[in-house]
Every structure is written in structure tokens, then in C-alpha cells.
Image 1: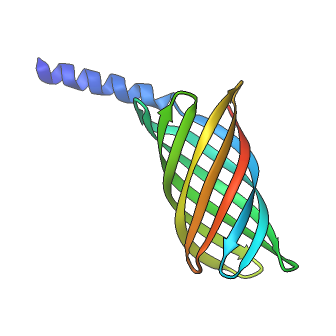
Image 2: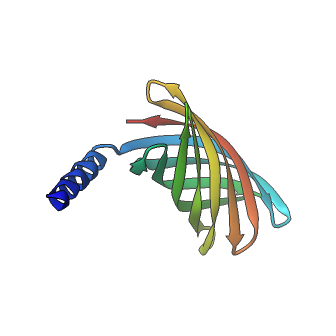
Length: 151
């Protein structure tokens, strides 16, 4: 009897996760520094929030498309992140690993980390501030701000 009750509770818990995901689209600007150069970049991001959640702790995923002009050269790249989140009132703190692929003007692959905070403004709108680190191929870091809309 206890086994059936545990199975029922597990199924009920996992079925509630299925509808909990929210999608988001956003954009922002950031300053990039490191490797002896600096640049301002702009980007858009697509996210899936609450892939999994247990109380205030969750998991989000995000794709970024970023562009920058550095010394007259336009750089275009994409990044993917999986982040652990922690909800504190209207703030969500997040951090996790990040992979980056630069495809203009040359191709390069790198890895790094991301950490930030998101503030829920209301009506599906939130503002965020974050730090992105790139460890390979060269050390680089970005500080950025932006807005996101959840749907």
C-alpha cells in the first residue's frame, strides 16, 4: 500500500512540472572587457524558465545571440546556458555554465559561466543584470543589463 501511495505522489508531482515551464524573450546591452580589448555588445535571448522546480530552487535554460563591433570588425556569436535558480521574493538569482560559438568573422568555440539576478516588474516583464565569463579560447567578461518578457 505504501508503494502505491509513493508512486501516486511521484506521478502527481512530476505531472505538475509538465505545465510549469514559462518561455521568455528578451534583449539587452553589455560591456565586454578582457584580452586587452573592450567593446559594447547587444543581444537577444530566448529562455525556458522552470524546467524543474522544487520550492524556491529551479533550473532554467537560455539561448543568446549577440553582436558587437570591435575595432571596426563586426563579431556575431551565440551562447547556450543551463542555470540553477533561487527565488527570493520578486528576485530570481541564477548561475550556471555557458558554451559560446562565434561564427563571424571567424569560427571559434568556447566555454564559460553566467551569473545574475532578475527582478519581476509585473505583467510578464522582468529586468535583469548579469555577469558573463568566458574562460576559453581567451579570457573575457561582460557586464550586462536588459529586459525580458515571459509568456
